[in-house]
Image (tube, rainbow, N blue to C red; front, side, top):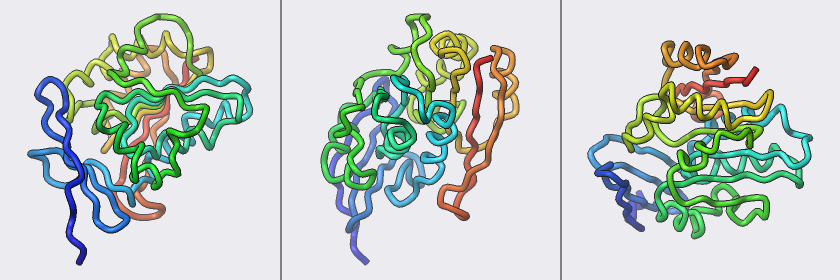
Length: 225
Protein backbone atom coordinates (compact mmCIF):
# COMPACT_ATOMS: atom_id res chain seq x y z
CA UNK A 1 0.00 0.00 0.00
CA UNK A 2 1.22 3.49 -0.84
CA UNK A 3 2.13 5.36 2.37
CA UNK A 4 0.76 8.78 3.25
CA UNK A 5 3.11 11.71 2.67
CA UNK A 6 2.72 14.81 4.84
CA UNK A 7 2.52 17.85 2.56
CA UNK A 8 1.87 20.59 5.06
CA UNK A 9 0.52 21.68 8.42
CA UNK A 10 -1.48 24.68 9.60
CA UNK A 11 -2.40 26.09 12.98
CA UNK A 12 -6.05 26.86 13.65
CA UNK A 13 -6.37 30.25 15.39
CA UNK A 14 -7.10 30.54 19.11
CA UNK A 15 -5.49 27.21 20.01
CA UNK A 16 -7.83 25.25 17.78
CA UNK A 17 -5.18 22.63 17.05
CA UNK A 18 -3.10 21.68 14.05
CA UNK A 19 -4.29 20.58 10.63
CA UNK A 20 -2.21 17.99 8.79
CA UNK A 21 -2.45 17.82 4.99
CA UNK A 22 -1.32 14.54 3.41
CA UNK A 23 -1.31 12.76 0.07
CA UNK A 24 -1.36 9.09 -0.93
CA UNK A 25 -1.29 8.56 -4.68
CA UNK A 26 -4.09 10.75 -6.05
CA UNK A 27 -5.89 10.84 -2.68
CA UNK A 28 -5.66 13.76 -0.22
CA UNK A 29 -6.51 13.93 3.46
CA UNK A 30 -6.83 16.65 6.09
CA UNK A 31 -6.71 15.61 9.73
CA UNK A 32 -6.95 17.48 13.01
CA UNK A 33 -4.42 16.75 15.73
CA UNK A 34 -5.93 14.95 18.69
CA UNK A 35 -9.01 13.77 16.77
CA UNK A 36 -9.34 10.22 15.46
CA UNK A 37 -10.19 9.90 11.80
CA UNK A 38 -10.18 12.46 9.03
CA UNK A 39 -11.82 15.84 8.81
CA UNK A 40 -11.80 15.59 5.02
CA UNK A 41 -10.84 13.15 2.30
CA UNK A 42 -10.76 13.98 -1.40
CA UNK A 43 -12.71 10.81 -2.25
CA UNK A 44 -15.60 11.53 0.11
CA UNK A 45 -17.61 14.61 -0.84
CA UNK A 46 -21.19 13.74 -1.78
CA UNK A 47 -22.83 15.52 1.16
CA UNK A 48 -20.81 18.69 0.48
CA UNK A 49 -22.03 18.58 -3.13
CA UNK A 50 -25.66 18.12 -2.07
CA UNK A 51 -25.30 21.01 0.40
CA UNK A 52 -24.67 23.38 -2.50
CA UNK A 53 -27.27 21.83 -4.77
CA UNK A 54 -29.99 22.28 -2.14
CA UNK A 55 -28.86 25.73 -1.10
CA UNK A 56 -28.64 27.09 -4.64
CA UNK A 57 -31.54 25.33 -6.38
CA UNK A 58 -33.81 28.38 -6.14
CA UNK A 59 -31.34 30.67 -7.95
CA UNK A 60 -30.08 28.38 -10.71
CA UNK A 61 -31.26 30.76 -13.43
CA UNK A 62 -30.96 34.06 -11.60
CA UNK A 63 -28.60 36.65 -13.04
CA UNK A 64 -26.22 38.31 -10.60
CA UNK A 65 -26.96 35.81 -7.85
CA UNK A 66 -24.74 36.26 -4.81
CA UNK A 67 -23.70 33.23 -2.76
CA UNK A 68 -21.52 33.00 0.34
CA UNK A 69 -19.71 29.76 1.13
CA UNK A 70 -18.33 29.47 4.65
CA UNK A 71 -15.39 27.09 4.59
CA UNK A 72 -13.30 26.17 1.54
CA UNK A 73 -12.28 22.72 2.73
CA UNK A 74 -11.26 20.70 -0.32
CA UNK A 75 -13.25 22.90 -2.67
CA UNK A 76 -16.22 20.60 -3.31
CA UNK A 77 -18.87 22.87 -1.78
CA UNK A 78 -17.57 25.82 -3.78
CA UNK A 79 -17.36 23.77 -6.99
CA UNK A 80 -20.93 22.50 -6.64
CA UNK A 81 -22.22 26.03 -5.98
CA UNK A 82 -20.52 27.32 -9.11
CA UNK A 83 -21.96 24.46 -11.14
CA UNK A 84 -25.47 25.23 -9.86
CA UNK A 85 -25.33 28.90 -10.91
CA UNK A 86 -25.20 30.72 -14.22
CA UNK A 87 -22.29 32.70 -15.64
CA UNK A 88 -23.54 36.03 -14.28
CA UNK A 89 -23.30 34.98 -10.62
CA UNK A 90 -20.64 35.37 -7.95
CA UNK A 91 -19.62 33.05 -5.12
CA UNK A 92 -17.63 34.42 -2.20
CA UNK A 93 -15.80 31.74 -0.25
CA UNK A 94 -14.52 32.55 3.24
CA UNK A 95 -11.66 30.45 4.60
CA UNK A 96 -10.17 31.10 8.01
CA UNK A 97 -6.85 29.33 7.41
CA UNK A 98 -4.61 30.72 4.63
CA UNK A 99 -2.80 27.41 4.17
CA UNK A 100 -6.06 25.73 3.15
CA UNK A 101 -6.38 28.22 0.30
CA UNK A 102 -2.77 27.52 -0.70
CA UNK A 103 -3.38 23.77 -0.69
CA UNK A 104 -6.40 24.25 -2.98
CA UNK A 105 -4.31 26.38 -5.32
CA UNK A 106 -1.92 23.42 -5.67
CA UNK A 107 -2.53 19.77 -6.64
CA UNK A 108 -5.51 19.44 -4.29
CA UNK A 109 -7.45 21.84 -6.50
CA UNK A 110 -7.57 19.27 -9.31
CA UNK A 111 -9.91 17.07 -7.22
CA UNK A 112 -12.77 19.60 -7.38
CA UNK A 113 -11.69 20.85 -10.84
CA UNK A 114 -10.01 24.01 -9.54
CA UNK A 115 -12.99 26.13 -8.47
CA UNK A 116 -10.65 28.88 -7.21
CA UNK A 117 -9.71 29.56 -10.84
CA UNK A 118 -13.31 30.24 -11.82
CA UNK A 119 -13.71 33.99 -12.52
CA UNK A 120 -16.97 33.96 -10.54
CA UNK A 121 -15.07 33.04 -7.36
CA UNK A 122 -14.06 35.65 -4.80
CA UNK A 123 -11.86 34.53 -1.88
CA UNK A 124 -12.02 36.04 1.59
CA UNK A 125 -9.23 34.84 3.88
CA UNK A 126 -10.59 35.27 7.38
CA UNK A 127 -13.55 34.38 9.57
CA UNK A 128 -16.85 34.14 7.68
CA UNK A 129 -18.34 36.11 10.58
CA UNK A 130 -16.62 39.21 9.16
CA UNK A 131 -18.96 39.01 6.14
CA UNK A 132 -22.12 38.59 8.18
CA UNK A 133 -22.24 41.73 10.28
CA UNK A 134 -23.27 44.55 7.91
CA UNK A 135 -27.00 43.88 8.50
CA UNK A 136 -27.83 44.51 4.84
CA UNK A 137 -29.52 41.83 2.68
CA UNK A 138 -26.73 40.80 0.34
CA UNK A 139 -26.76 37.08 -0.40
CA UNK A 140 -29.29 34.85 -2.13
CA UNK A 141 -27.77 31.80 -0.45
CA UNK A 142 -25.38 31.17 2.43
CA UNK A 143 -23.76 27.73 2.62
CA UNK A 144 -21.94 26.84 5.82
CA UNK A 145 -19.49 23.95 6.03
CA UNK A 146 -17.07 25.46 8.50
CA UNK A 147 -17.10 22.79 11.18
CA UNK A 148 -18.69 19.56 12.39
CA UNK A 149 -22.12 21.15 12.65
CA UNK A 150 -24.01 23.33 15.14
CA UNK A 151 -21.39 22.69 17.81
CA UNK A 152 -17.93 23.89 16.79
CA UNK A 153 -15.24 21.19 16.81
CA UNK A 154 -12.22 22.70 15.10
CA UNK A 155 -12.69 26.32 16.13
CA UNK A 156 -14.73 27.40 19.16
CA UNK A 157 -15.48 30.79 17.60
CA UNK A 158 -17.62 28.93 15.06
CA UNK A 159 -20.21 28.51 17.81
CA UNK A 160 -21.30 32.11 17.17
CA UNK A 161 -22.58 31.12 13.72
CA UNK A 162 -25.06 28.70 15.27
CA UNK A 163 -26.09 30.93 18.17
CA UNK A 164 -29.21 33.10 18.19
CA UNK A 165 -27.07 36.19 17.51
CA UNK A 166 -25.26 34.52 14.62
CA UNK A 167 -28.41 33.14 13.03
CA UNK A 168 -30.12 36.52 13.32
CA UNK A 169 -27.16 38.12 11.55
CA UNK A 170 -27.37 35.51 8.79
CA UNK A 171 -31.13 36.04 8.47
CA UNK A 172 -30.55 39.76 8.01
CA UNK A 173 -27.84 39.17 5.39
CA UNK A 174 -30.12 37.05 3.20
CA UNK A 175 -32.24 38.48 0.42
CA UNK A 176 -35.99 37.81 0.47
CA UNK A 177 -36.60 34.07 -0.10
CA UNK A 178 -32.91 33.45 0.48
CA UNK A 179 -31.63 30.08 1.65
CA UNK A 180 -29.28 29.06 4.44
CA UNK A 181 -27.83 25.55 4.11
CA UNK A 182 -25.70 24.08 6.89
CA UNK A 183 -23.68 20.85 6.82
CA UNK A 184 -23.65 18.77 9.99
CA UNK A 185 -22.15 15.45 10.96
CA UNK A 186 -25.45 14.51 12.60
CA UNK A 187 -28.99 15.65 13.46
CA UNK A 188 -29.78 18.30 16.06
CA UNK A 189 -33.47 18.82 16.85
CA UNK A 190 -32.88 21.81 19.12
CA UNK A 191 -30.91 23.55 16.39
CA UNK A 192 -33.86 23.15 14.02
CA UNK A 193 -36.07 24.77 16.67
CA UNK A 194 -33.57 27.61 17.01
CA UNK A 195 -33.68 28.24 13.25
CA UNK A 196 -37.49 28.29 13.29
CA UNK A 197 -37.52 30.73 16.20
CA UNK A 198 -35.37 33.12 14.15
CA UNK A 199 -38.01 33.10 11.41
CA UNK A 200 -36.76 30.44 9.00
CA UNK A 201 -38.84 27.69 7.43
CA UNK A 202 -36.70 24.62 8.08
CA UNK A 203 -36.18 21.25 6.43
CA UNK A 204 -33.57 18.63 7.24
CA UNK A 205 -32.12 16.14 4.79
CA UNK A 206 -30.07 13.05 5.55
CA UNK A 207 -27.35 12.57 2.94
CA UNK A 208 -24.69 9.89 2.55
CA UNK A 209 -21.03 10.84 2.40
CA UNK A 210 -20.79 8.80 -0.82
CA UNK A 211 -23.63 8.27 -3.31
CA UNK A 212 -25.81 5.56 -1.77
CA UNK A 213 -23.35 4.58 0.97
CA UNK A 214 -21.03 5.84 3.65
CA UNK A 215 -21.68 7.93 6.75
CA UNK A 216 -25.00 9.72 7.16
CA UNK A 217 -24.74 13.49 7.36
CA UNK A 218 -27.44 16.07 8.03
CA UNK A 219 -28.14 19.18 5.98
CA UNK A 220 -30.26 21.92 7.52
CA UNK A 221 -32.04 23.86 4.79
CA UNK A 222 -33.59 27.09 6.05
CA UNK A 223 -35.67 29.47 3.92
CA UNK A 224 -36.07 33.14 4.80
CA UNK A 225 -39.78 33.88 4.73
